[in-house]
Image 1 (cartoon, rainbow, N blue to C red):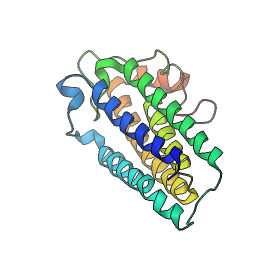
Image 2: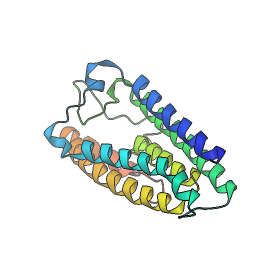
Image 3: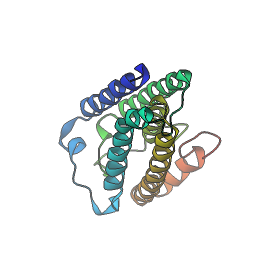
Image 4: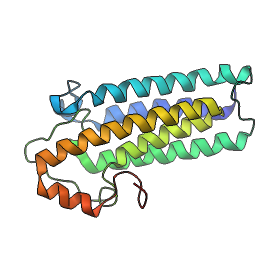
Length: 191
């Protein structure tokens, strides 16, 4: 098994440890979604489980040369992407502080967060997770896994972001519309 695959597994474990440690308080740990969630928490959960299973299966596929990328450099680039995603997710969560939750909820006294990185993109946490997933797909050096992770990750985040933006607009009204006009949804200059 390639060292990049082992390191990718370690980074995935680090991601989950970080996620747990950054969520503070009863509301942040709540797993029960509200109606405004529209099933998007479950969509993200299922897409995450499938992505992790694909990354775990990649070495078996590589053993049989199914979708294998034989360039080790590619694996190292995937690890760099994973580290970048981990850093972005951490930054986004630390910036949100007590408002960093698992499910959609606007807490009493909550304001729109517009400090970096939220002054440029509205969903840096989702970008961080996407970079982690795509990086893992690259790190395991299997193009089939990468393709599946790309489709699953992008589709689930697209749905989640749409639902979340509706909820935020309903909660913050015109203030959120002004914020939307000043920022990118996920990727600066593209989306």
